[in-house]
Amino acid sequence: MFRHDKRLQFEAKPEKPDPLFAKKLQELIGGAYGEMTVTMQYLFQGWNCRIEGKYKDLIMDVATEEIGHVEMLATMVARLLEGAPSDTTAEAVRDPVVAAVVGGMDVQQAIVSGGGATLADSSGTPWNGKYIVASGNLLADFYANVAAEAQGRVQTARLYAMTDDPGVKEMLKFNLARDTVHQNLWLAAIEELKEDGLEGAIAPNALFDEENQKHADTIWGLSAGSTAAQGGWMRRTAPDGQRRLRYLEDPEPLGGPASVPPPRDSLYGTFAGAPGQGSEKGAQRAPGPRQGLTDKVKDAFD
Image 1 (cartoon, helix red, strand yellow):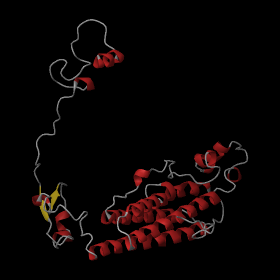
Image 2 (cartoon, rainbow, N blue to C red):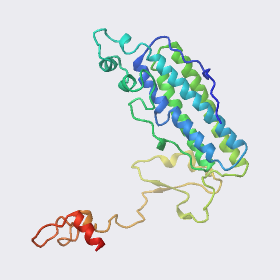
Image 3 (cartoon, rainbow, N blue to C red):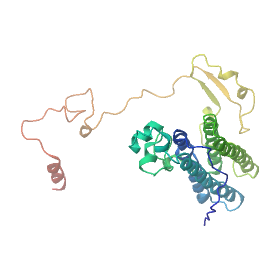
Image 4 (spheres, rainbow, N blue to C red):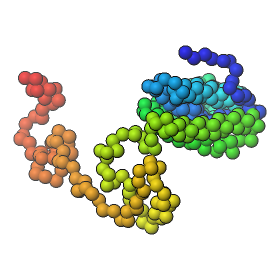
């Protein structure tokens, strides 16, 4: 069960309208690393968590907070669009869509959402549920959460540098702080999973005996002039505590030629074989009317 509080998690009041920045701010709402992504990512991780207690509760706490972040940003977008596009463009521009373009406003905000936020990124690409990671393995998911918060913080920092509006900056300062907290939180939760003996350094903590041991500790030197072998990771035990990494200079391919079987005739593939072997289109056919799809289907059932 969820409850809604009419008060925002943090204030979202710009000093003046700015339709162009409202469009930029859409990235933090509906982008691949926006607040909608982490909201749904954490909700589904929490709903799918099979361990009752602190981990599930933590996930749901952060997930619910992220819903409030979406609300904050959507409110800020609507306020940045207040009076737009007509009040922020030349009076001669009467058509609202043209005015939106002239003022830098997202046309979708003018046509579809009536001057409010949309569930899309800064380019107008709709938000996609494929952005989220919710595998059911807490270690793998928490690593993904760290990355999501890091990318979100990078984008928030860039947007912070793109505005001089004091009200917008104050809200973004809050967002930056919460991204910092959440990165630290997921990193700490990763360590606690290990301390509790639930997971190791590698996700999942299974099939180590079955994996190909010969290739479990090598870095393949596949970049000309690579200096990767000089990294500190070569001088310490790997994070799993089981092995040390080795560097292979100029490794050889382990498989055969990357050839594929000839295509089926019905797929009309290009094949340098005898006539008719690779392409039904190029086969030598006897004169006469071609059989249509309907006839072929009928023949199949006769």
